[in-house]
Length: 613
Image (cartoon, rainbow, N blue to C red; front, top):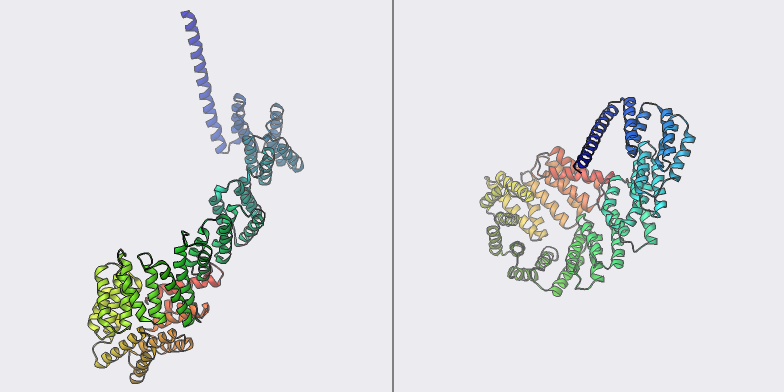
């Protein structure tokens, strides 16, 4: 018994040694063959790969590699002969017909080769590994169309028409067949609705403007048949948002909302996107849809109401032909909102905007002041909202000539939010108040501090003000002129335009050659803009630019003209002319960076790139 065990143990050890030796030798041969192949010694590689295959006939990789080596060594007849032998042994390996066809094609027998390619497709079995192997082989041989046919044949065999749609789409993409790629990807999405982001990513990367039109047409066609399929609707919505076609995006969002009953989430998303892109018309329509079609208990109703008010405000103010009645109507809508929701910490921002409309556009101070006092007195209001209300209230007091009430409120905000932009705004306004009433030394000191403000706008304005006061201080005539100019600016802030123009005209007559005359012309232009007298505004700005090219306010006038032509008169080419003049002739201007950026954006718009709404 012991002898038997010993014999069996020796036999097992012998087998293990043999197996180890064989495996080691095979590994060494594989490594050597691979090195020959990499180094371009294909005949040597072929000899080793066929040897390895004969040792392991189930490892089809070795035979594939053997055939590849023969092809690269231009041994096409040898490859044909050996592939045919292999087919006799293993006719179930349909991919062998692909290799045989390629061997014949290399010999110039194209028609015969295609017969074998077709035979490979006919003999293909419904096995995942076989289908992918054949498709990959066709791709390796540069036969992408046959790779597509392989996947289509696989879909027939499995009875799943979209099983390989993503792979087919990828191949069509590599061939530049964009329409077929679109169809394949949409087919794939039909079976894999959770992969919408993948399809979006592919379309975003690979479609041109013309291709995107094809995508939209295909999506519309499919949605006519399957309007309930959400991924197609979401993809079409995404497409129009990418194209910045917010009107059509809103149409899709509303249609989806009616089908999906999602409380208006997609409509809100379109509204927010359009608003950020300054398409206030679409934003307003979208928010209005929520207000008209959802109840007050809808989770988006409150937001829609506040954003609708904001969108409408932008629409009115951006329209050069808006009327006082438009503004009064807007104020009435603000009041309706506050009557509906009450005054509290959540509605305080709307109350502040309501007061702003009353103060600066409707010119009705008493209800605005009363509303702002209530906002400031609210319990639980966050510090920044309270600060905004105080600044607005101080503005109202200043317009009402209640100087000390105004300065007290500005100072409170300055003290409570010292390092905050709102604190800097309050400090700047307080300095301007001092300037209006002739306290130039204190105002200049504050402007000097504000040169380092975190807000670029406040910093730039503070620099301009400090330089202006410094250059006009010292001489009695300059001080008198500056006091008169400050009174005119206060009158402008208070919307007393006739009084301001009277002061400015008297300065023009009394001091026609004084250094302050550029400021006089600039302020006249601002008044004419506020009164929508655009021709008069252009006239005085052009006079300032032409007669006083080196004055402090020249770049201000240029920027004002550029904005007038861009936003109000809708003449981008003329706007570009003034923006360009700023950054070329006045490169040290505080407007130079912004002017260059606006010039670039308008240039792209005119060239049809990244159009602005």
